Amino acid sequence: MAKRNIALTAISLLVLLLMALSPAFATDKEVVVALGSLREAHITVNRGDHVTWRNASGEKAHLAFVQDPGTSHPEVWIEGTVTVSFDQPGTYEYHVHQPHAKILHGRVTVK
Image (cartoon, rainbow, N blue to C red; front, side, top):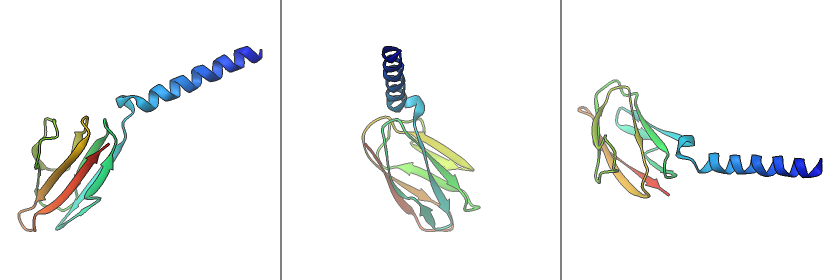
């Protein structure tokens, strides 16, 4: 009986470890775009994580990355939300422009 409990515990730990390492279990972070400001402009995520930009400003907002993060969304208008996955380690500078506000700068650091 003790051997069976040890085996079940080992299998459970292995499953948990695989889940923690899997991109399918990536976490989401959110950057809120307000009129003239960004909440959580500089964030750090793990490889495989997703970042969602939510436009709460009531105006159009344009998101552009200084260097391409290897995604299909290197530049996009944010109408509601846009989500970008970060699969490569590095630092990705971006800016958000709103027609009636200053250009806002942020950074996503991927470990």
